[in-house]
Image (tube, one colour):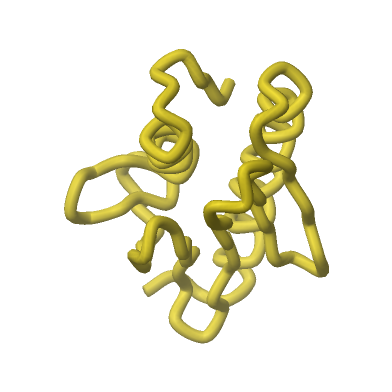
Length: 112
């Protein structure tokens, strides 16, 4: 497990990068809104169907995503220098991109 200061630094960086990508995608797409409330990210869908929540969990050094009635827990991978979902190997941005595509049934959504 990485130490707390490394976790905070890396999670802040990963979440800020995700935030910028979501803001850009939100501007282009218009089918969801992004909110950042004291470090908790919410992706709210305009059709009111559901929302995704992304939050760092400092005590256990993971980034958690609640989406599509599932909890995803991403761990820091030193080899890829990213928070990844061990089951699939997806990093944070790739996983959110896939979940957005599935939720909105839109394969063109891209998070850069």
